[in-house]
Length: 635
Image (cartoon, rainbow, N blue to C red):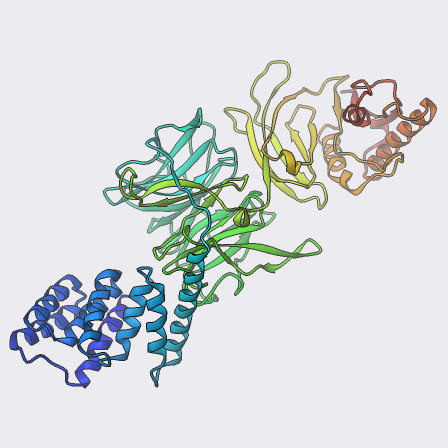
């Protein structure tokens, strides 16, 4: 890449040499020749110094101005490149076609889109351009057209600095936040060393940031580009040049273990290769990992890839997200929102305002199967500018975006800000369930298994163990869908619950205290995820997951015998309700027996409306009374 950069810098000089352009001022020509020698060794500062001296000695030394513009442009100093290129055109408007390309690219990257548009078209009008030159110039013209329109139609953008708890005189960037917005992890650069820090929110303010972990941060290697699972328990990050690395940069993972972070481990192949893998983003269910790679099989430059977790815990062969997301240029900084459908990323390949812009795309579905991605949508001006925008993350409720920028009034260098995301750019509505599991009698915190299932397709959206220190878990859920929760631990009765998050109540998360009861005679479990057709005893498909949990419980506890109990509300006559409740209990009994649970271990009984949990004064109460449960009869 560096060799290519050098060649690009030298290209105008080579062409000019063929035209035998030189300075009549001997000392100016000497400085020009010396600058070219410095360029051959990539000593750009010294080359700039010599060329600057050359144009002082000869104010009409067109070739020296051209070379200055090329070096400034290739090293990212577009403002100075502009001055040099304009001077070339003042002296000789037809001196060199590439002058107009260099000028236009510099104008694009300083936000002067109208002039850039004209100068790109001027360059495109010259005959003999290569196909590659035409392609890139046409792409830049599209950027200019988009930018001029975007500036006329700005989006709402009011960034708010997250304050002194997080930001300092150092550089802070790459923020990621947990689903409950109570903890943020970010990168802080001090003396060129990057480390992870965290801050927790107390009374709406971010507390002073703390060093994340000696297990993760190092002095010898570079860590960065991290993401965190919605519950805050898994940290994926990029580690470079580490002894256990497979390539220059690899993806690593660390787990929160109650009192600290585990030693990170390399997730290995096929995700990591001898090449470069970085910038991970994990889906809310922990089963899809999005990342950036330069591996073969892509569309050019940096591409975004996805790997899915296999049933044995290994990562599957990564798939490129395809031309709906990736371009011949660079796509980076992927962030998959907890809705598992909205992807945010940066790109300099799709039409934008210059350098890298922030984009979003949504999954396309047919019959609930993903068929692709929608065309990426630029987040708009002034969220995007002629500078580089990247590293965006979004809160689980979709309202706030977090990013880093260097703005006036900050604490120094890059600071972390939040802003309210425009409605059109927001992901699907997501809420979360947060629970604490403990022993019902002793109140002891329990490390229990928690599983949350999408009841429609039976797929797990969360499957993990509670924090061993706090007994807590947190999982996100999309509004408008139904989910079943199951909490279990050896020696205890399991806990069952279901949720259907309401779009209108999405800002009210589900906060649960879950007391688990030890397996004792008389112990009772309400099977909240067993469903029947209204007024009938046919099991609905959504009941399968709960029934499988019950079957698993019986197999893990072979000495236990249970009674299946059916209950109704008081709508209808008492005799009919008793018959319906018994038929429903019998249906569950039959399902268990058909799945090889001994009939000697199960009985069933219908109780009708005689044992309500609540009075029947409201629909919610009647719903609670219509239930299936099981009771331990022998242990």
